[in-house]
Length: 111
Image 1 (cartoon, rainbow, N blue to C red):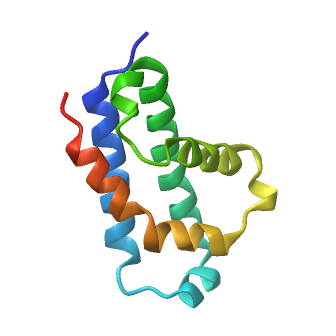
Image 2 (image 1 turned 30 degrees about the horizontal axis):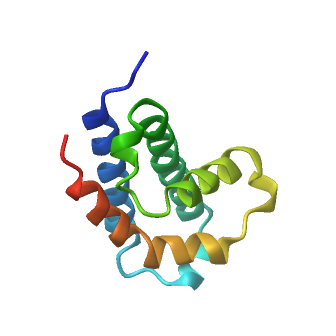
Image 3 (image 1 turned 180 degrees about the horizontal axis):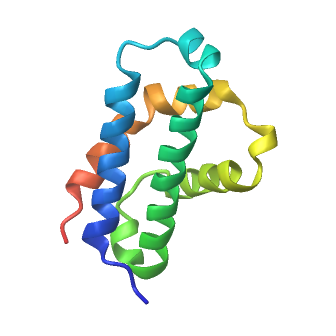
């Protein structure tokens, strides 16, 4: 079954918005000290990666418009399968520095 590309795009957009809302004003120290924040970040990043993996599989011509697609999907795989080896500095960098560009890429996709 092919997934609806608009639904996948919406899933990514909503996950990014949730991270932005919940992490606004937080520091890396806040993140390290709060297991709940870590779990939220892991889950939202996993959703983003899974949605983009499905987009790549079902609509590769659309997915090609997302920069760093392989890295995003790779992070999802680490979150899902390598949970015991997570580097929270890397996750924080993604939260702080990568989601804005991804949000821009997602908004530019014409379906």
